[in-house]
Length: 214
Image (cartoon, rainbow, N blue to C red; front, side):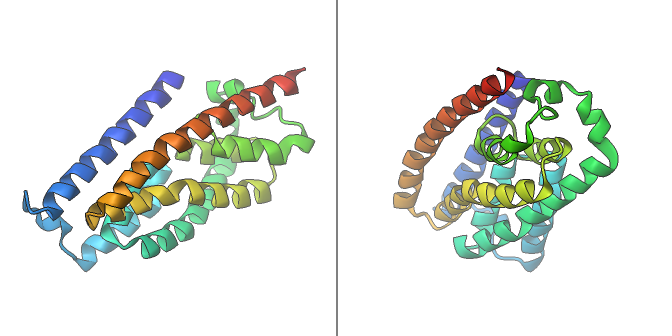
């Protein structure tokens, strides 16, 4: 299962890299692609895709980059912050309406022990689970509501953390579209730093699960 998650992360990174290279080459005039010219229907299609595709498991980070490319980063961030709660609410409804029992019997449930979280640890677990780079965006959104953790924790913490984690990808897309190389360089420094912090939090997650078992 974790190999699949690793493959998913590599796929998302390659997709983002491909998008950025195409955008930079096009904006630099080295290639000519009409898809990067402004078009209202294209903008609407990207927004609709942003609503739907992450619910189907498409890499969230890649769509955020596309949002940043299509819009400036302010509008892109507003769109992102507005759509994430929709994803959280719909994911919670889908899970609790159709798939909770199936998730309960899944290998993911046993691996993350999501049905065995003490009530006094709900807040900490929600925060740690949402922020660590263990599973993709969509899987987090589907797993956590199945655990019985209060919806308010899942919704508010998920909204805040996913927005904070997603913001750099929107800015990355806008920086590539505007050929802001200084911002691109700054983000190249930021992303490894964030990854290092996430790895530390991942260890905290496993320590938390170990403490819960003892």
